[in-house]
Image 1 (cartoon, rainbow, N blue to C red):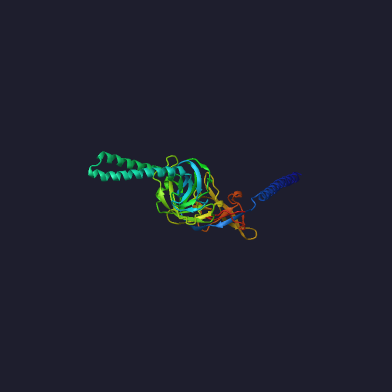
Image 2: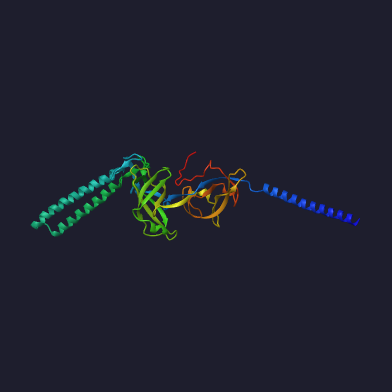
Length: 377
């Protein structure tokens, strides 16, 4: 009986332990299946192979175009417009008459002064002959001489007043829109028309004082104007200001551009590029490939990690820190962290972390143009 009871007890204990271990094994299997089901699904990304490209270091700035000579022409004295000798937008030569004011009264006064001065000249010349024969005194000759000089001065003064009644082009250039009409009373200082000398033309811009060591007079400059997308105008630095602004620590630079077709107009906004140093070969990537953070800039490399069930390479993402340099257009230069031949994620990295499985789809690639141009849609 004792042996029988011992056997029953041992069998019961064995069954109990078997049930416990079986449950634990079943539980572990279920947990594994659940964990496997909750693992990261493959994420679709676009990729690019890292390559070296020629990279020309350059300084960039923004500036404005201004004329070599430019002025808003106005009258020095008041008067009524009697004649207009130009059309809006016309090209004129230096000295060309533009606007006349009524000047009959001033001209008449000038003629009277000329007549008086001519009489004084005749008197003085006669006195010079008479003084030789002692017919008149030296004092009379001196008095007539200064009378003549005073008359000549009054004629010159009145001639200047008459000239003020005619507005002429102070230099050759292109006129703007006419601002006066025939018969209009023109107050002194009122703008008649703007005159701009367009060829050549200046572009003024500012650079930080740290850039002074990289620029010099005569250095090539390329300017891009929003009005002419896709076109760059070539010029050269013509002047560097002799002082640095103490408020901004910037220095003003002036570049000169040939403008024979007058495509550039004063006041236009310009983006200026100045090539400095020699070209380098650097790793370049689309800017979308870089995730910029306060603790460092990162990107994701594509690596093979074994094979999947179908025998194809299993691709995973690996995060790495990089050091970035200058940017140009849609591109950024990478100074360290990747090397030529590496495959990097260029889009879709926001949903990645280390060892995340990925699926590559390069049907759509991010922009990677060093000189992008605006496109109207």
